[in-house]
Structures are given as structure tokens and as C-alpha cells.
Image 1 (cartoon, rainbow, N blue to C red):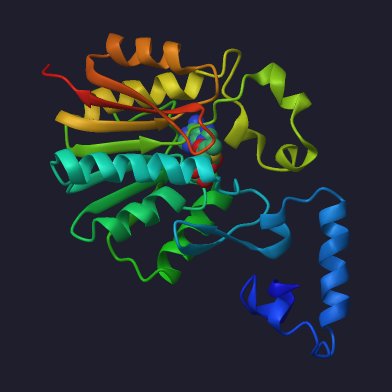
Image 2 (cartoon, helix red, strand yellow; image 1 turned 30 degrees about the vertical axis):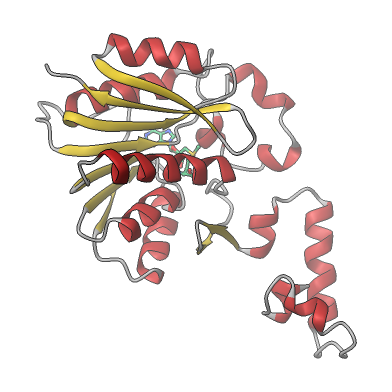
Length: 256
Ligand SMILES: C[S@@+](CC[C@H](N)C(=O)[O-])C[C@H]1O[C@@H](n2cnc3c(N)ncnc32)[C@H](O)[C@@H]1O
């Protein structure tokens, strides 16, 4: 109802004695019906808040989650407390642009490169970056299975919320989640295909002591820790999200 009245989530309660403007009731019930059809709330409303920014979302783009806010906050917290402040950031699999936009706002001096394979994601991320008035983001189409050849270390932070759900588990997800793009969810047989590729890319493009920050699935922490160590990462930290689950990995690029 707050969305139909274009008011805050709690403000509309204060106006509960007022008559609804023409059309608002019809609009409200149409949204309720779509939600009852198990369409994700973000798609019904067309937007999703992420760390204080309202992002446009819709079919073809993953609705950003609170665990990803925790990923971004953990990375920002570590960079602000231990340094160095990043001047070049890479967000792999940007979707709606949520991570890249939050970082571009937190580090206005930094240049952020955000990549995705999906055309719908790239379109949405560009719209969201423009709506946020950000000039320090470049959004590029890139397939993480085909990383740039001969890349030299250039980034201070590589961050990603890659697809990490094991293929066999997709069919048992809630119907809302299955309406989101399969490509945003499916991490291959053990869920680690994309995570391993992101770690490989981070190992090549991060400067020494550069930070890699990853979201992962519940139960993947030990395998992600091994993948990071095998690629020469140090100071591997596994951090709990706000639900108390080990869903975030942070690590520093060691000397080559
Ligand atoms: C879990 S979603 C994360 C979206 C966004 N970063 C967020 O946190 O809300 C994973 C993203 O990776 C993208 N992706 C999947 N396979 C990819 C590939 N081979 N190359 C590049 N991006 C890919 C998807 O299109 C999707 O946007």
C-alpha cells in the first residue's frame, strides 16, 4: 500500500483514516495478486532498497539480498579500518549494480568496473548507476568464464556475489527464487564453479595486499577457504552474515 500511495512504509499507517485516491485500491489489489502468484516482492514493486539506495529491479535481474549488504559492509569496514583505501574496484556479476553502486558511493575517489554477462543486468545496472548520479562506474559485458588474457595486477578490491547454488538444489528453491534468472543462481554441480573462477581472476588482477570479498552459500566456507589459499591468498577471514551464517569470505592477495 505504501508503494501505491508513494509514501514511506510506515507513513501510510498514519494516514489510515484517509480515503484512498482514485485507482489506488485497484493498483494495490493487482500487486497483491502478483505477490500471491509468488512473484518476488522486488519485481512486484519494481524496486529494492540496498544500503540506503532504492534500486530498480525486474525480471532478468537478481533482487539484491540483505546478505549482500553484509558482504559490502564487511569489505568497506575492513578497508576503512586496515586500508589501503581502494582506488580501483572490480565487481564481478553486478546484476542490478547493487554492490558497485554502494562502493562507488562509499569511495567516491575510486573507479569501479562492474561486469555481467546478462544484457538485462547490464541495462538495469546502467539505469541504477545513472539514477544514483554516479560517474565513477563503468559497466561492461564480460563472461567470467572468458577472462581478459594477459591481465596485469590493477585492482585494489575484487568483490562478487557469484551464482553459488548447486545445480541439483535449484528445483527445491522457493518459487519466488526460481523466478529469478537461473544464471544468477546456478553455481554448477557443487555450487563452486563461479566462485573458483572469481578467485582465479582476483588472483591475477589484484595488486599485492589487494582484497577479495566473496559471498558464498551456507556450508561452502571450508572449500572456499581452500580455493583462496591454493591461489595464494592470505589472511582468509570467514565472516557471518546478519543471520549468523558463514556466508562471507575476505582475503588479501599475497606476494607473487
Ligand atoms: C547472484 S547474482 C548477483 C547479482 C548482484 N551482484 C547482487 O548481489 O545482487 C550473480 C550475477 O552473476 C551473473 N553471471 C552469471 N554467470 C556469469 C558469467 N559467466 N559471466 C559474468 N556474469 C555472470 C548473473 O547474470 C548475475 O547477475
